[in-house]
Length: 312
Image (cartoon, rainbow, N blue to C red):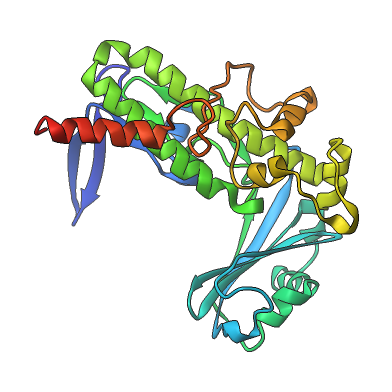
């Protein structure tokens, strides 16, 4: 620290302590975020109260997969949902997410096995695979921060917020906020006088994305963890046999959290009971769908090309 400003990172290597000075520090530490803990920024999301139980299984044979080799599978049941995510060609991560009350009084290992067995396609895919490594249980993992940046620092990805692993939205958000952070710092280093303005915009971009993801999660759990009732409760037309051609639903599940055009987003935004953050002005500029001009990724690449053309 230099006064109230973060001025670098202190680390230990081979028993010796070092300091790496920096004009800005990006905290990408996820749940282990140093800045969140130092400033006491996190608020727990008690409305979810979910627990994740998971471990890796080795000996995966994708010939058993009724879907596509290498795909991610998610299956819902009456007590929660199950994921199956390949880590390596022969190893898969399998996890069960359940309300805290479901785990209470039960053996976590037996619960994971029983819940994975409830999803036929996951049960079929795991045939012949055996547990490897320790079973892990994560509780009270839902949190958010209203402050995302400060003097000499900003946070990206799970360092500031984590709501739930459902739909793997955290990967998209980590990549999007990481790119936006890089673009923001590039501008700040070129024009330090704009730091407060640019950090404020980055914070609003970050919260816009995470807020929309939180609304999707809350709606999912409020409707018993079943997708079709959730869509129906939102007033979205769903065709018979559970098939929908509503492109806005597809885009939302693909990470369309910033778009001003998405009709499903507008429905979710109109429900104040789904609010998480203190009121803020949204940044409606999607890094993936370019309805509002060039994305953060596009702007950053343009900036890099400009520097290269000038020999920088």
